[in-house]
Image (cartoon, rainbow, N blue to C red; front, side, top):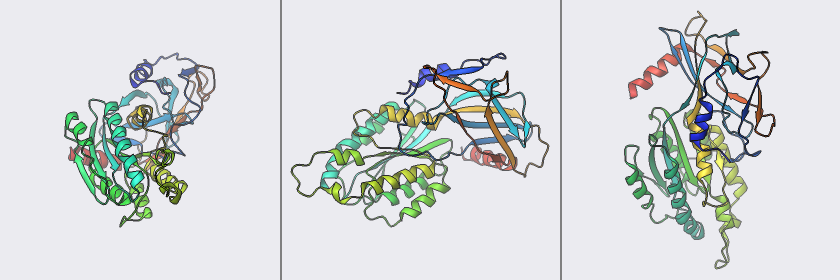
Length: 361
């Protein structure tokens, strides 16, 4: 189980030491991921300041199960730009506020599934609200045959709580693909860390858009999609009163595969809980993955044309030996770290992107 964020940040914000330890110790975590399959790569945030030559990178460092690795000190990071090691790195932890678009399914052709959705979805939404930080923003959308926005990012928590109670009566359609493309477009201009939280069975009944259209949209987007799949909950619900069991006629393996691919293409994650009683640990996992980053700043030693791409490599090393950094958990088990960062960036493009973002604020 993950440590609470407050404790995590207290651990990772320790000051760097010029004579830091030869290895670091992190809290023990589960040997399995909370999410299904593999997470896709999220885009690294890189900015370049032409007047100073300062490069700012925000990146993830994770273990094989996708948990954030704390305790890494400034001296443990090594950055190479075009093969040249950069000096005087400044390393901090960033826990950014996020804008979340909550998209929930209210509809479908199966009466039993609709009854389950009515209870489970409201419960799942309420738990998400309880996990958000004070600076986080939430917009709420529901979909059946069409998409309806129940709340926007500017509304207070009281309004959001009330909006969850207005999910309403399910329709006889669940047009997932149309809803995802619609929501991606609605939040395309949102600045900063953002994502879609999708609570859905994964079934699409009558969308005009195709599955391939969704994959194309999420691949082009900079918005990770974190999915709470309801397949296991629907399948595990007893149904003695109905002779025809809807779940038998649904290819759930295919449904979950498609959801997993959507999440992976976007840089998000798919979760398939057995029930919605205790989703807080899953939301904690989502918010940590979305919001917590190591921030590395350095003055570039390159004098190359700013319009040319530069190769960047970030490694973790023991400052005393130069060898790869040894990371162990509290039980002494060796942990493999994965640095998730872009391999190239173009200074002029990162300047233009930052200017564009600032202009939208």
